[in-house]
Image (cartoon, rainbow, N blue to C red; front, side, top):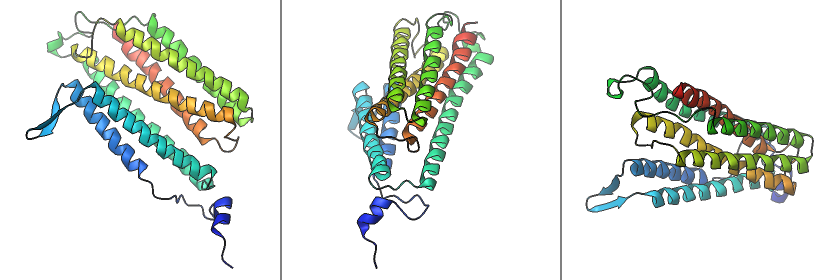
Length: 282
């Protein structure tokens, strides 16, 4: 007797492997991410890309277009993942374990991403070249006072780490209304942090083009700010899903991944605060 296909879709797979239908979204998202990186580099160097007489000048609109493209592909990708988990019941125990390993590896790659920035910063700070007068920070430049806006931002981000932990504990206890409330608080704190960083950038007395100090400062703190924005959107999606009750205490990988990501953002900020703000202005 042959099993009906609908019964297989309802009961989930009868094997432990992570076999999902082929999807174009991972490849398209990777291509969009590469285009975004290329557009950002060309924008920073005020350069153009082209072949022969055809030349395209990349600017802020090109960066925004690539970012929108990447967000769209990622949204379609994650929509399919939710469909695999809920409608197709395709996330077995091994699949869930693979998702956790994948998120852990992704965060590990992000750690090395920021290690490169810290390496560049301390390379210049501990061994300032002669062109900078062999001093750090260079004459005429200094990081914002650590006990001012940076300390406020630190308190905000650490507080958000507490609220996202409370949201995760509420989810494990099957209290989704409380989880949604704590996630809303985390999203609000993340938005306030972003506004504080925008205020800091607007009132800074140096720019990205202010030599080695400006480039390392803005690249490190700016990319961290981008991660805060991404994490805020991630948590906002989890907040909506928690309010709708579309997760369970045993099936809420998205919230777990978002919490891991947010704690990683918190930890990176602590290193930034100590290295760039405190040490940089000492």
